[in-house]
Length: 382
Image (cartoon, rainbow, N blue to C red; front, side, top):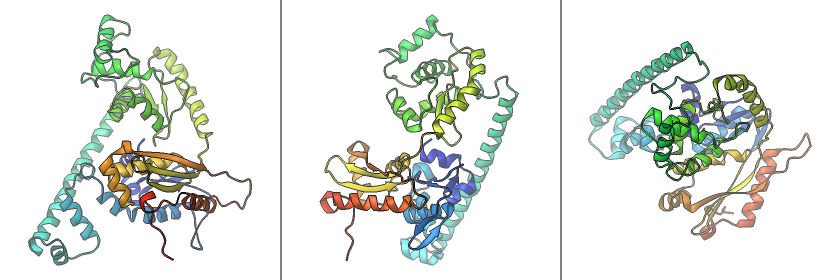
C-alpha cells in the first residue's frame, strides 16, 4: 500500500496524529518512515521512547500534520490554493482582519464569509463520510451473507469460462501481443476485467509474498495505470494483502474452489511468517538527479520506507525546496533513489543504531560533499 493509501485507510484519530501503530513499529502516514518499538532514541541529550520519537520525526520532517496535509495537491485535498492559504492562516491563529491584511483581499467581512464557506464544506464532508460508512457497512453485511465470506462480493457479470472461444477473443482484444505482454487498456465491462485479471494474476507465484513495490513494478509492465489494475486484482479476489499493505500474495482463485479453500488458510499463514522473517535494514541512500548529477544524501532506519520520499516529491511536499523544484521541472524519470550503504548491526546491548546511522550519514555527506552545484545540501555555517 502506498503512503497515501495508508493515510486513507487510517482512522480519523490516526490521521490527526500522523502515524499508525503496528505490532513492532510506528509508521508515519506522511512519508512512510518507521520507528521500531522497544528502542530509546536520544535527541540532543533527551531520551525519547518510540511513539514520542515518531511525533518528533513529524515535527522535524513535516512541521506538523496540518502543514503537510494543507500543502498537498488540490486533487487530494479538494481545496483551492486560496482555501488552503486561508486554512493555514486560520490555523496560525490569525484574526479575520489580520488574514485580510496579509492576503490583501476584500474586507474582514469577506474573510468571515470564507470561514462560513469552509464550515459549510466541513458539514458536506461529514455527510459524505457518513454515507460512505453506511455503504461500507451495507457491503460488509451483504458479503457476510454470501457463500464466500472471505472474498469481496462477486461482480454482477458472470465469469467467462477459461479456454472458451469468448475467453480467447477477449484476450486477443486486450492482449494483442499475447497475455504475457502489455495490456492495451483496462476493460470497462466486469466480464472482460475478470478475464484480464485472471491472466495478470498468473504472473504472480502462488507461494510467494510480495511487497507493494514489487507488485507495482510487475503491474506497471502490464499497464501504466497499475494502481487501478492492482485494485481490481484485489477486488475480484485474485490478490490479497495485509490490512496495512505491508504484504501481497496470490490467492489461487484461478484454481478450482475446493483447492482454493483447502490451501488458502495454510498458505497465507506460511507466507506471512516468511515475510516477517525478512528483517528491515537501516542505511544511507541518495536521491540523484541524473541530468545534472546533484544528490541529496539521507538515512533511514528502514530502507524499505524511502518510497515515502518519492511520494512526497510526486505530490510537491518534500521539505527540500530546491530538490522539489527540479523534480517538478524534470519529472520523476530524471531521478534515481540509490542505497549507498547498509548499516551493519552489532551484537552489542549498548549498540545505538540511531547514533550509528547518523555517523554513517555524516560520513557519506563528507565523502560526496553535496553542496552548491554538486547537491541539494546547505553548507553549515561555522
